[in-house]
Length: 226
Image (cartoon, rainbow, N blue to C red; front, side, top):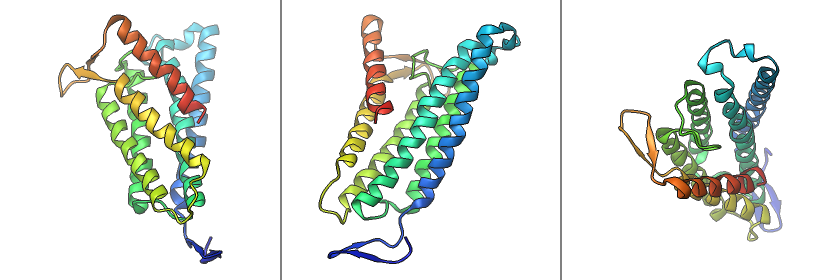
């Protein structure tokens, strides 16, 4: 959209931030291919165990969570962030809150989280919590990125030129807030050292298992079905 358009007495902005949406779309396709290739490779490992090559970072136990997280959080996550930023601009008739710099930080910050998590998987630096494997320092980074995401999305809704808040934006907002709550509570942990990677959950035993799958099932409900 290159010219200022009018709808009744409400002006439609001449330029939406489509650059960040395009970046998320490209990242979605890239991580989708990575995730699907990882899944294909570990499927072959089930039939031909020699494909482990006796290398720990290529073992099935490390590549399986890499595959699931690549598909869920890298492929699915980029798709969700990109579509939400596209939809909120159109339905609110305004560009993204915070300008291009904040949107670019969100994009590159999320990609950095994906890379850190992936390296942790293959190197064996994880919490051994399904769908929540990354260690405490990666969790802190994702929390920061997710807060930026909430600020951009909510700020755009508050700046809207459309009096009605479309139901899609309520769904996206519920997804953002719920995932934040799940991520923070499930990953409450005490690092062994602030210069090391290892941490221990604040929960133990049955409570730890319940908290993990309170996270796991609701992450599926509010992330994959968002």
